[in-house]
Image (cartoon, rainbow, N blue to C red):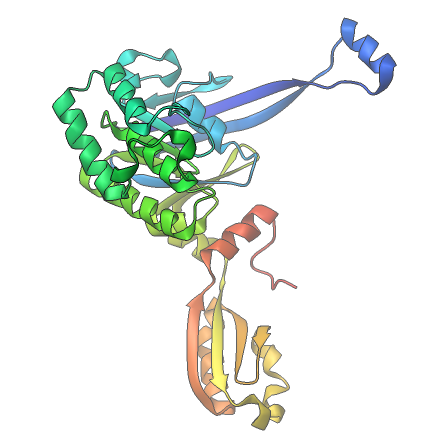
Length: 334
């Protein structure tokens, strides 16, 4: 059985469009014009138990709306979903005790209370025994390096510390499904790395199924082998992270190290091998079609006195950015 199974899920929102001016306001009293927006449009995917999947898309793509439906906070307009065999929006107790939703920009901790008291309240809600609660809190605060902050008021915690406490609060009841919506947003580099390592370790040890949204490609590259991309509510891609490069970027970056000032005649026509992305006094970087990388490298070695040559994949972040901007990645960018 799949941990998460989504079939043709659709969610529409209707927003009131006020007409301009006083006359428009008066008309709105008698007849209102609503605009229908498809936040999620016929999306289908399946996730195996224990998978850690990246859920990507630009702002407004429908990621958070999808997570909220899977958490039972929103009802879909059509379609179906099963999470651990349950229909989320039926909000059965048996389901609510098996998942957790962490929204990076929302608080679940009491703002004016020490973090420990919020955690103790969560423990009471989920019926967690005192010894298990203490053991879990000790372990998680140690892993996230916030043990010394348990008795500090939440409002006095840094953003990184608060985010770590939010994760601990969500994991107290040992959920089988974890929905993470921008868990590292706004965090400094050190806190981001700590949270990423914690998520990776928790997934590996507890086999928790995790669906992760993030605008930080470092999160996705560090944690996810598989990614699902949606844009304007529609499923755009579902597959291995590495396949994004193979499918949407059919070129590589070739950098040659050499003394360019002494080889100007040979360099005059180097653009015939690929688009020049960067040029310095000692190196030049070309964007070269994948199927031409080997012959291009051979030609460069024959024509130039090269001290070093480096071949790299296009950074996945650049590929995703171009996918979202609607650019054809098979064409050289200007």
